[in-house]
View 1 (cartoon, one colour):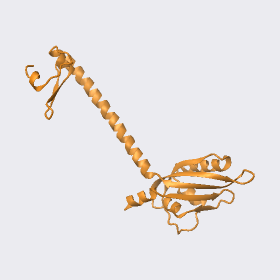
View 2 (cartoon, one colour):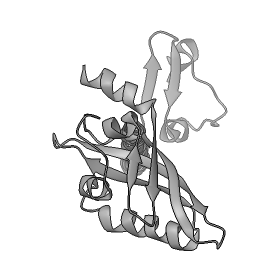
View 3 (cartoon, rainbow, N blue to C red):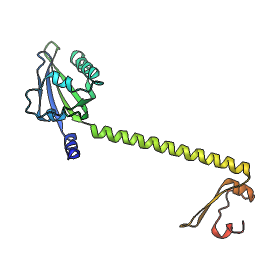
View 4 (cartoon, rainbow, N blue to C red):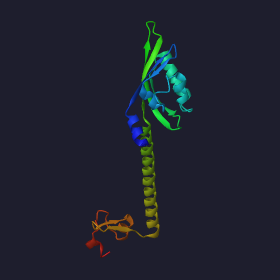
Length: 193
């Protein structure tokens, strides 16, 4: 299935090399798979890489690669690729710059791996946390409005957990019966009220 293929791909690391001077690119077979290609399509090219980059990530990824090659900055980034099938995948990329005796960039050797599933799970966790915060805020606002309504109407509310037989009284109930909030109502002692 597609999920099995995605999980299998996420566990694999592709290795690449880019000759900064000649522009020649070498990919292992996993790199081709990470970018949605069969490894039999021919040699990898720089244009194949840039053409696979999501249009919103292309300029940044190319800039970061060029910066690493020219300044020795760390190449440690993430970008999206669009497979020939149209599927979008998130790729994590790191590389080191190999320099010649004069200190000029000669080539870069790097790794790529698929982090799409991690991004999806992170997104789901973020949405769940936002929903939880919204629900907690709604409960807090409901409790505030309930307390205000009780106070204005001089009424209160109580709850009974049928399984544990535990009573819960609102603060207004304590005020109505002039009891300290330390009083713990039970089925037996709450009936007279």
